[in-house]
Length: 201
Ligand SMILES: [Zn+2]
Ligand SMILES: [Zn+2]
Image (tube, rainbow, N blue to C red; front, side, top):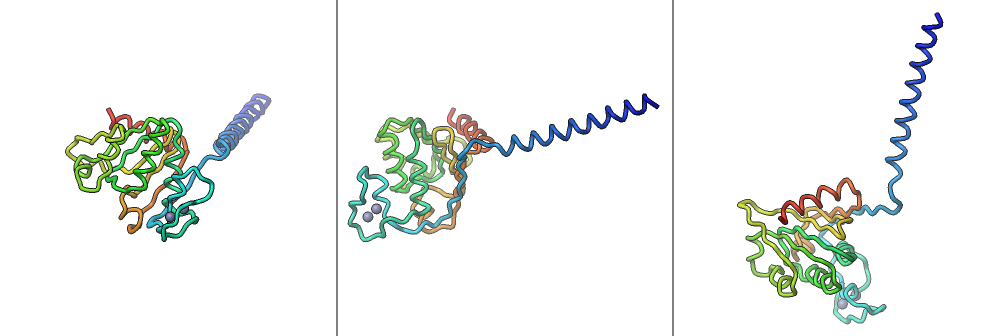
């Protein structure tokens, strides 16, 4: 009898322990670093002036006819790109958007290491900003494989991932229905960092 009771007690103890362990795992999963950034941007973006994003002046000095002030998907994207403080890795199929080019140039000008990987066929197209980036001294490589380098992602400081359907073109930003996911989730960022390194080598 006592052997049976001991066995039962042990069994219950094991069940209780595994339940506690399961609970702890669930709790730990919920405890992510405070302020982990997750954001979704949809395009087309409303056409507004983004001049102030490139200016260090507190008030927007621009007198162009576009609307001034409202935050849009493009302004959010530009802000994320320009938040880079150590590195900016771009893996973009088509890069012809002048505002995004300006943002990358601004990031490069403040001493951030910028690497650009793009598709060789699109880079040769009129309007591509790859030549402009190279002229500024930014290292831009064209993927040499026989298939398209069709990725559209950016890594800010190896910590923030911007990825989605959006090519960095005027049509992509102003006309098409596109999406960009912005995330700091390490489990999502890590594979993109590895993919960039794999393609860059
Ligand atoms: Zn403005
Ligand atoms: Zn303006």
